[in-house]
Length: 169
Image 1: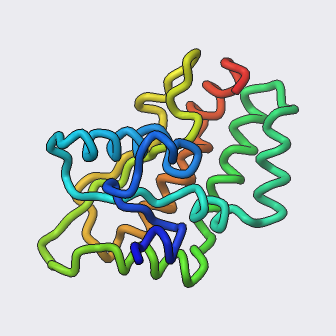
Image 2 (image 1 turned 30 degrees about the vertical axis):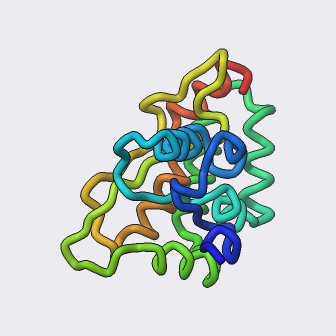
């Protein structure tokens, strides 16, 4: 039984493909496609939307996210986005999500990781979020969970929220 079958918080590129766009995001799904095509891709995995939902499963966060659609000034968007980021960055993944992420890491002390976004609405026919979300390179395994959380919080940076508002996303 694969990790994907036992835990939906992470999914290896080898287990990922186009069918997983809503679960793994565009970048994650496409990396799976490249692996299946036999192209050289560094070993890796996707922290899935299930982990994001578990992290943001909080009434206050959800209310603030819903409020974003009704805000019409840059200051209001910025203030609300900052509140969302702070709430996400101050939350912990539940134990099973954190364990799924840490168990998937290589225990070699010299291994470092790239933590990048693969948001489900990142690459749309009418908009591209290239460069909008935070990326962390050279991350030691002890910091991966924190950088994943920071990457998820970066869905709510001023530039990203303003971009979504301008493009009605």
